[in-house]
Image 1 (cartoon, rainbow, N blue to C red):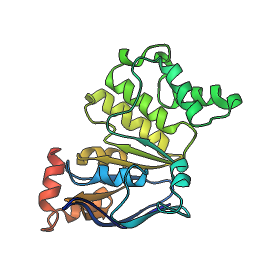
Image 2: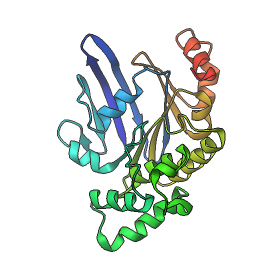
Image 3: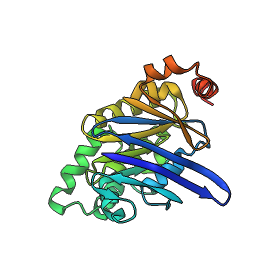
Image 4: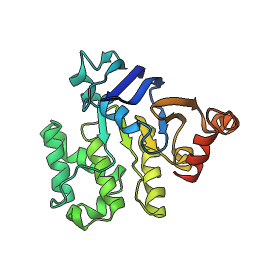
Length: 238
C-alpha cells in the first residue's frame, strides 16, 4: 500500500530522516514509534506533500511523491498534532465546510457528515462551537476532518497527545474502529499507546529505523544494544 524507500531529509546540516525504508500493508494500523525529535513528523510531512525529501522516495499504491503528489493527497486524510480547525465555527458547520473543500457531492454531503459524526462519537456536540469543546472532542472533530471524502489512508500525528486518560481510551477505540476499514499510520512516543492500538510498529530514533516488528517482537528484542535505551525511554513515555 505504502512504500518508503531510503527516505532522507536534511535541514541544513541536520539529518532529520536518514535513509528510512519500510512498508505499510493495506488495512494495517502501523505505529510510527519514537522519542520526540526522532523524525516522525518530518516523515509525515513528506508523505502528505508538505515537505520535499532531500533524497529517496515514497510510493503509495502505483503513485510516487515526485510524479503523482496530487493523486497521493487524494488518498490520504491527515491529522497533524495540532488539529487545524476553526474554533469559532459550529461543529456541523465546520464539517460541512470541510466537505465542500473535499468536493463531497451535494447529494451525499449530509449522509457523509452523519456517518462521520457516528464514527467519531460527535452527535451530541454537533450544535456546539468548537471552542466550547474539550480537547478530546476537538481531536475527534480533527479526525472527522481527516476522514472527510473517505480517503483510503489515515495519517495521525500524536492523536492522543495532551488528552486525559478517559479521552485517550475513547480516541483509541475510534482509531480501532476506523482501522477495520482503512489503512492507518499512527505516531506516538509512548510504547503503551502503540501496544493498545497498532498491529505493528516501526521504531525510529535520531532519524533512523532501529526496529520494525510487532509489539511482542519488540519486547523480545529490547535487550539488543542498539535498541535497549530507546525501548526504556518509550516505556517511560519520554
